Amino acid sequence: MLQATKVSAIHATTDELPSPIDALIALISERAAADSPHLQLLPTISSSERRAFRLGAGIALATEAWRLSRRQREVLVLAAQGFTNKQMAFELGCCPKTIEVHVTGLLKKSGVASRNELVAKLIHTCT
Image 1 (cartoon, rainbow, N blue to C red):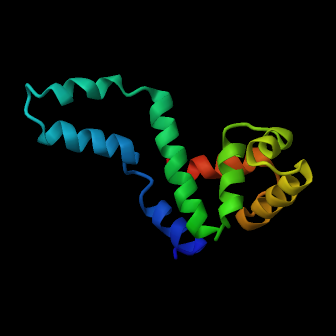
Image 2: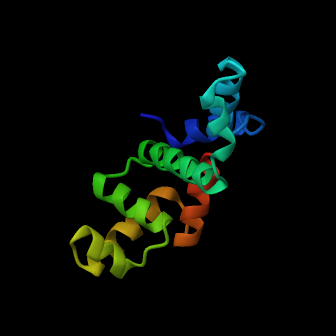
């Protein structure tokens, strides 16, 4: 398991690197034949799809670094999508108070004070 300090150290040394999806696009562009039909699809990847990829990668890293439970991970995914506690409770089949407990646990594990900071930290993890 990656420790939070290791993730921070890795991130600090990779700030100048392209995002994972940009690196993947560059690699495919490099290796694909110029007339490849797959190469023509690459420009169609939207910025929202790139953001979703980065967010997914951030959630994977956060799950390891912060040692999240399965349920905390589910709550983190929904919080990152902008769900309210009530919406999360409905989606996950539990009561809003349970979601509050999970959000509080996420805030403590991530070392931030608000949901907005949590999502910002999550996005910053993989950009």
